[in-house]
Length: 184
Image (cartoon, rainbow, N blue to C red; front, side):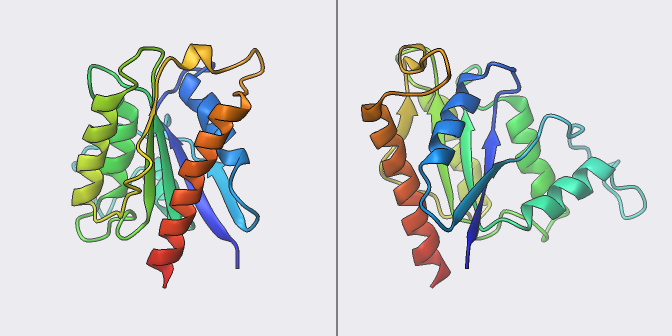
């Protein structure tokens, strides 16, 4: 039976480095593991006042239902001000509600942070992990995935070299291993 991996990209920018890395990661999953980038830029900011039994925004319902189809989540994010972009945090918040009905509960995850700088999105990576602990998501611990100096890794077509691809594959392999261990 095939496993489905949702890929959430924190950057909304058309030429996003994070999205380019995500696409490289998606190519390296083994057969039987299907991945898909899930749109999160269209979600209204989470507000409990509009998330009521009588008036749930359609975007919330669509997102929550879509995410329920997936067995695991790969988060790929840039760092904004030493944390995650607002749209990614918003998607996490939307998925965690209503209270007691979180779509995240027990879904294995991996976190990859991407940056043109040398710090490699360390702050975003760890802030995101903090939320995932609360949401009861088992997260890949090793290899730690901080992709720094990303502009030097991507060619004009958004592809990475074989050495980098090997590292990305090790991240995918660790997530697949976690999925399989958690599925038992």
